[in-house]
Image (cartoon, rainbow, N blue to C red):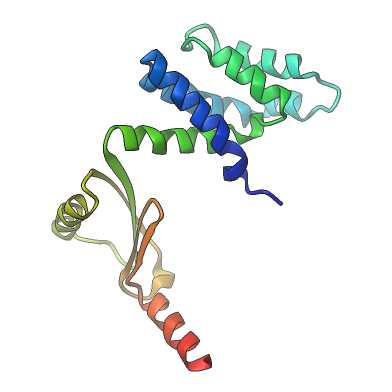
Length: 178
């Protein structure tokens, strides 16, 4: 089965290219975030899941909920997604669009998952270090996961640094099995 992110990627790239060409990246970002919230609304989801509804009906419902205060081209974008039965991927499209926007803004989205709360001084040092390593400003999200036992996992795009005790134990177990 194909991953939703894989299916959403062409839509995100097309929307991003259109937004860049139109000079409306921020407006499209907001519109896609709104679209992702609209398609999960129970009333809208009922229309989207109805096999008797046509692509035009699905697109019309979503466009009506979005309203007229949307950037140029969003209605057509919704229509294309509806025709291809991809409106359910709106949140993946919005997330991928946000990644492309971050790359354009020269910012890296970094997620730090730690076993315990990380002091702000350590986060500042980590942010400074990652900024120099990645060559971009860093937008950091911090999460806690006690199952890591200790240490942290840092994710920045495709780069993953696993410094967790759980990760080290897994490596050790794999080495011992070999």
